[in-house]
Each structure stands twice: as C-alpha cells, then as structure tokens.
Picture 1: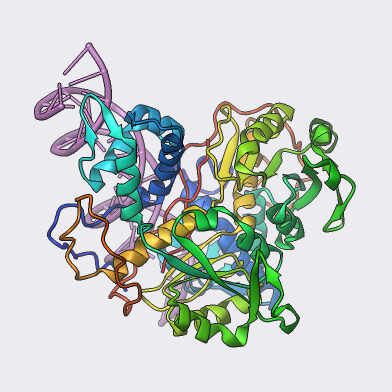
Picture 2: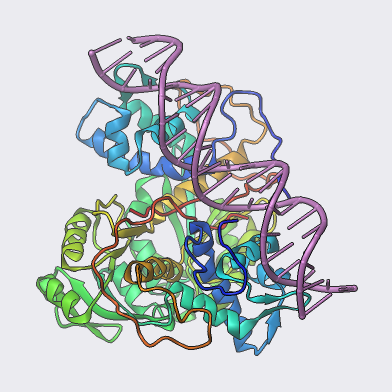
Length: 258
Length: 258
DNA sequence: TCTTGTGAAGTTGTTCACAGCT
DNA sequence: AGCTGTGAACAACTTCACAAGA
C-alpha cells in the first residue's frame, strides 16, 4: 500500500504528475472556448492567462504530454484540444450513475457540463421507493435494488454518491462490489475502498471552513493573538475589515484518492 | 523549525501550511463524531484512521497548532475540537449569501452541514424576477438588484456563486465591490479578483475528468501506448478491466485561491 | 510502556532562466 | 525576433524514525 511507484512503461511520458492532471481540464476548457471562436493558435502566455495559471507552469505541464507546440509560434488549438482530450480519456464514452437523488443529486443530473465531455448519465438511483419511476432531468429514477444490475448492464465504472452521509459507505461498498472503480463522493464522510479504486470528494462545508480560516486571518492582521491558547471563548471579533495586503497563493487539495 | 515553541504558544500560528489548513475540517469532523459518542481521548493513530490520513501527517499538522496532546495518552477530544474550531474561525458567525438559485443553489441552500458550523445563510439571490419572494429552504429569494444592500446590511464577507458560467464574473465583481472577500465558485469559469480576495472553486466536470484519466490508465495497463502520438483516433478501447495493482497516491488540488 | 512532537530525509510541485528551434 | 521546452534551483509537502516525556 505504500508507494509502489516503480512502473515505467518504457516510453517517455508515462507518469504525468497528479498536479498536472488536475490542471488539464482547465486548459481544455480554455482551449475549447478558443476553438469556438475559431482561434487557430495560442501562446503559452495567452492560454495560461485564460486558464488562470502562469505560463511556465503551463509549458511544463504540456511538456509531460509531448512537444505539441511550435517555437516562435505557439500551440495549435484544435490539435491541443484533441491531445488533451485523449490524454484525459474523453474520446471515449463514460457512463456514470448518480446515487441519491435529493436536492443535490437532482442538481447534478441537470448539470449540463456533465454530458458535454464524454460523460453520460446512465442511471439515477435512489433508496426511496416513492421516487422510483419519476423522471429527473428526463431520466427515470430507479430503486437501489437495481443498483448491481444497472452497473453491470451499462458497464459503469464511475459512480457519483450524493446520498446522506449515513448511507454513503454502504452505497460505496455496493458500487465497488458491482464493478465501479472510480467514485465521486459528495457525502461528508470518509469512504473506505479497496486498492485500485479512486475516490475524489467534494465537500461544501470543508471549502467554506477553509475560506473562513483565511477570512479570519484577514480580519485579525495586527490584533495580536493575546488571549490565545486559553479556554476562554473570545467574544465575537470584528468581522469586516479592509482587505489585507495579499491573499494566499498556491493550490490546496480538496480530494482524497485511495 | 520556524516556530519557537518554548512555553507559551503565544504567537503560535504564523503560517500554518495550506495543506494542513485544508485537512483541519476533516479532523474536526472526525473529532465531532467522537465527541458525540463521548469519547474522551483519542490517539493520533485512531484519529488519523477516522479522518483517512496517516498518523505522522496528522501529528505534524497538529504540531503547527501547538502541543495539544499528551505523550503516552493521546489528544483530549473536546479540547481539540475547540482549538481547531477556533483556528478555523468557526467560533464566530459567518453570514453567507448564495447567488444563483437554480438546481444547485437550491441544493446548497438546503444543505444542512451549512448551518452546522458557524455558517448562516443570510440571503438567497437570483436574477430571475419570477423567483423573487419565493421561499427556498425557508428563506425568501431576493432579486439581484438588492445584492449590494444585502451584503452591507448583513456584513457578509463570504459569497457562494451558483449561477451559470456566463454570469459568474459579473456577479463576482459586484460581490467584491460590495465588500465580499471570500468566494466559493461553483460556476465552471475562472474568476478574476483583486488581491486580498480568496476564490475557491468546485467543479464537477473537472473532478469527473480527473477520474476518467485514472480510469483510462487502469484499463490500458499493459496495452502499450503504441498508436499514441499520432492523429489516429483509437476505436473505443475496452472499458472495464480488473483493478490494477495500485491506485494512485497523493492528493490533488481542485481549487484556486487568488 | 506508550504516544506525542519533530528534526531530517525523501518526494512532489513550482519557478527561473535560457538554450534551441522556427 | 519570438516562443517553446527543459535542466536546475527552489519551495512545499510528506514520511521516516526516534528522542522526549507522560
């Protein structure tokens, strides 16, 4: 379970850094926008600006994919779109199931960007028998009893969990047992999965807490942390202040692969 | 290391690593669960397991907050809950506005975990006049025209954007102009903000694409990347395969502070 | 004895700066 | 002349391994 990182399938670029993989969708989005405006080529500087990163990072990222640019000119937009899509596996069809069709599940089912790239909502699954048959985003909700059959019949390998926290691990176990090997978890729980299964998590509450941390720092910039380590709960401090000198820089995980 | 830790935690936390900050909410959740079961103390090993990290990392993380543990014993659950809450700024009240009350915005408004820790939905805002006055999650939706007044009246410093991509930047600009300094962005766009404003983003599509990347790797483990860099689109490859030896290890950003 | 707290080593990610190609 | 691609320096983060202390 430790780092079994000794695979080298010979050819150059096996082993794209995770940080790079995480940015490829960003580049792809920016490139798609350029493509729609029929822009033929783009420099690392321009593309980096559109994606919100710096150009050195972008060039380094692309260097892991191969030498797809032209010195003195830039990158061919269409070609890059294709290469990145291929690298991400978006040239194939990914059937996805969403489990837990509450407010969030319904929102996800309705989310357009879903279908836009290779992803197809193969089924919506909910534990509430009253939901069964009701269409959400044009797709009839099916009961949890059908879960295993649906996974098998559709060759689903990616599952989205949008259930309450209490049900998430159990749903996860069933998904994995049925053959799912990638899970996107919206439930506020840590999921335990066997090796070989990826879990990514999205947690609103965690994101807000991280923002609150920085927000608090902005507020108390010079007010020394005098009454600090004690047990005394400080009476509500000032909430709004003029923005501090500088926001923090650098990205942060919100994710937990297995 | 940097922190001179002799007797008084005093100026403890100048510069908690971002990676650590991002994990504090995770620890807090695990601790809260223990607290509810009236567990008095917990070891780094146990707590790490509950939070889904390894114990060395957890101890290192806690060491940035101060020496809150007892050697040979572990950590006092209640005390740690308080210390982390305080560090994250959750001992104060954070009024939050949600802009864009579509499927997702409504889901967020209904999300329970919201209120559970210091966060309070101060207002829901939507551009559709037909929505105005309608209650969502018990809170009446207000029109975008009111945005600036709402921010001011409630001293809001955290805004959540759940609008379509096209409207996000404009909404963001207005939020910032009105005094918001932290933004959680669900719209699939890169937001540009002035220094001192934090942006975190949550993007379903990006998460799925990252999963697809790893999923593709699992499938083609030994099929050499023969027909690789060419322009030829490979006919849909096998989709399901037995899990590979090892899932990838290490976390990945899904976020973009400014 | 047991578990924390932490230097030191190792790993991954970012930025610099410039050689090399068009 | 301009822009990519990349080695090398730097910075952040993680893991190791063990001394210190309850």
